[in-house]
Image 1 (spheres, protein in one colour):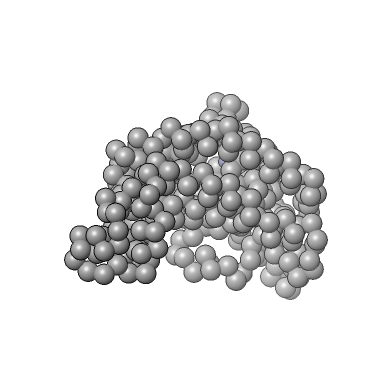
Image 2 (cartoon, rainbow, N blue to C red):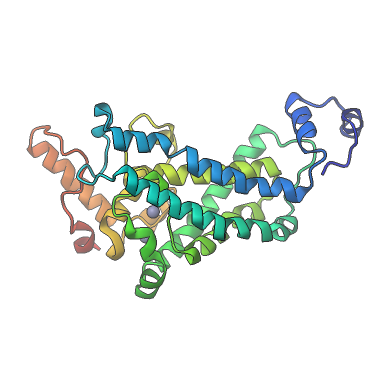
Length: 302
Ligand SMILES: [Zn+2]
Ligand SMILES: [Zn+2]
């Protein structure tokens, strides 16, 4: 809740007129408690996971010809019924685990020092904090994910996320409830290290979820803007991890590729890419459609 009653009060406290964005923020947030603002995340999550994967569902079900060539595992096709079942499971998980977790985790946000007042952060401040959040989350997630691939972690927890050997957008948060809770920790570490404004925090949660939907989309679109982000893994990178499944020792990172490179856990993936490239050359440009034809490469090379 803002400590000003009117816009002119806020302007005199800042020593300048409010920008358009600040005026909009004032009008929206002045009478709302910080707790209510924080809980907006729940609505954003429900909205993002309901809407963002929809184009992928249409592409998968309607089999629009132009998109088939971008399907990473073209032999695997899910029906509308399968995808809606996945959506139902994910929504139940949100309702029973993620939502309540958000409702009770507000004290951690207070402790971290996420602010809701004015002035709003500059674009530069927001972008630099978001970069830190992504890097911290990626590094921490890498080690937790790698740990979950030991026998106990996989059998008891992580196996659920790997039920989709050819992932779909709706399956991005499809996981055991314990995995949802554990992976909440890396999401909070970045904001704890570089606390920012509530708008930056909202943006972080939203962008991270959209990124997860993209990496689980099952399609490798060449025009996606994320192709321009240095060291970004993307759909094909994570799809390979799902394809190999429980015994995978490759591609643990959630966002970038540098952790797998540094710690040597991308050897199987790189070897497989090399083999596919060679096959393509040998068949004189005949398309392999990006399918994983060499199914045991990951196991042999690690
Ligand atoms: Zn995994
Ligand atoms: Zn995954």
